[in-house]
Structures are given as structure tokens and as C-alpha cells.
Image 1 (cartoon, rainbow, N blue to C red):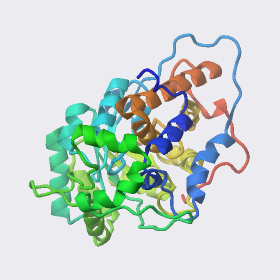
Image 2 (image 1 turned 60 degrees about the vertical axis):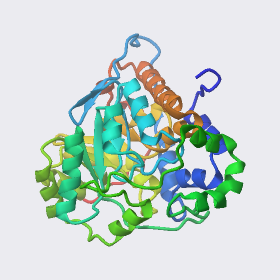
Image 3 (image 1 turned 30 degrees about the horizontal axis):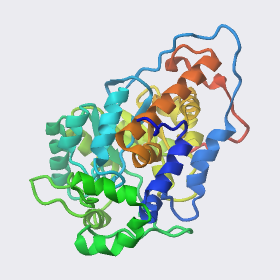
Length: 390
């Protein structure tokens, strides 16, 4: 990793932008509509402040915790993201980096690498599902993940097919074949390092989703699976409770921003919830998860584990989320930028940046363990929180 090390997630993003073709980088930045939620996810953390101590600080600090029954060395897990065509190894590289860091991998059902390959790289993997297909198909998809060794199931419910960005959306091809590759050669030539990685690996960017099939069928394209998803009726809470019955391990409901939904997830049998607005990629003007976290923790934090994602860019953000009651955080763009910047070592670099920042935060606040953090460690400005429906 000599010469590739970077000291911040912001630098990883700069290198990702330099390394990736414009359309690929644009897909990573994402966000929807005006980008108000995308911005609030990051800016909300800046409104929270610390009041550090100067003496009696801990020399040794314990960052370890458990999430969905798995012991992890720091309270940061990998959030599932789809079709990681930024690096030839994709999710397998991310899984290896997570294993190296001693943490868990979340794998999307829209990933570019199979659940079997990813679990081989990191046995501490949670499988994520969207509500695509009928009950029989969903049960078979969950069973495939269980047979592969997935340690938990994450069901993502917050997608509302909100499309369009004020700054434009990149054109993503239906599939990668030689005709498409020739079309994108001019754009790829501006970022030759990215293309050379795929050439050396013998791969081309794969836009199929191998975790959607259940019986060994050919993997559909991303847009083929997305079309199926669009025409699948959205689930009811009774459907969620049914899926919970099909899965006898840890079960997380992702996409929660309201107290009433958090309570319904508990009633449906969830053992964890992920407070999330899909990284600002969904319904714009949804508040940052950190703003709704305290009310949700107060309502259900004694009943389920609460995970937060959205806007995590440094270890101090993790500390703030834990102080407000999260068990752990999940990162998405941060590790994708690391992957684009330097492959597996880049993801490892991002996780170490966060680990170091968490340690600094614990030291400054005089806390020996991530489990000792409390809201009183923060200065929370008036009107910071957004109280969701009770």
C-alpha cells in the first residue's frame, strides 16, 4: 500500500473521482432530486459538538461490540450497496477488507458478486433483500443465503422509486458487451487506470445481479431485476412478519425514520433496525438519520439493536451516533470511495481512518469503551432533532 495511503475519507473521494470514469463516479455520488437529504446527512453531524476533558483520560480503549449476534472489533459495519463495478473484485474485495478489520459485511441482493463468494471471503456476512418477487421467491432467496452461511438477514423497505437529480443522472447501460464497451471507450480513456484494472483481471464491469436467482438460473441484469422490483407490490407489515418467520436468525429492518414504523418493526419480530434514508438516494427532504435517532432509540432501543447509516465520514461521526444510542453505524459511500481509490487496501484504509477517529473521540471524552458513550458527551443545539410520529 506504499504511496497509496490516505488520511481522510474526503481524500479517498478525491482519488475515486480522479480514478473513475465520469459516469461511474456519478453513480457513486448519487442522491435524488435536489439533494437536500444527501446534504443534511453530512451537515447534521457538524451541528453536534464535543466538550473534551484534559485529564484522567483512558490510555487503553475498547472499540469492540456485537451486532446481530456477531462480535466485531469496531462499531462500524459495511452497508449493502448494489453492483460495485468500481473495481474488478467488487464485493469480494470489500468483504476481505472487512474481515481484515474484524467487522461484518452487508451484501446487497443487487450485488455484482454472489453470496457464496462473499461469505467465503468473510463468513461474518449479513444478506440484504429488497421485496422483489412473490413470497415463494423471497423465501427461496433467503434460504439460499442461509445455506451459504449468512449470519443475518436485512430487509430494506424504504425505496419509493424516486428518480431524477437536479445535477443529472449518469447513463448506465443495460449490460456490458463489446458493443457497449466500444461506446464507452472514449470516456474510459480519460481514466485508463480503471480500465486497465479490469483488463488485467480478465473481467469486464459486470452489471448482472447473481443473488436474485434462486434455482441456478442465469443472473438478470441490474435493470432487469429493478424492473421486476418496480412491478412487485410493496410489502405490508404482515408480509414482513411472514418473512421473519422464514428466517430463524438475526433479522434487521432497514430504512426506518419514524417511531411508529420502528415499533411496527419490533412487533413484526425484528431483532435490529437500521435508521436510514438510503443515503439520500430515495425520497428527498427526508431528515438525516442522526436527527431522528434519539426518538427512535427512546422508543425501541431496549427492544432491538439500533444501527444508523447516512453521512458517516469520520470516526467522530461514529462517536456522535453511539452517544445518541446507536449500537453501531453502517457505511456505504465511504468504503466505495476507498475501493475506487485503491481496491481492498483502500477499503481497509477507510476502516482504519474510522477506527482511529473513534479512539480519539473516546480519549477526548474520557470514555474507555464505546458502550460508555452517552448523550451528555455532546452539545446538542436546540431544534437539532426531528421527532417522528409516536
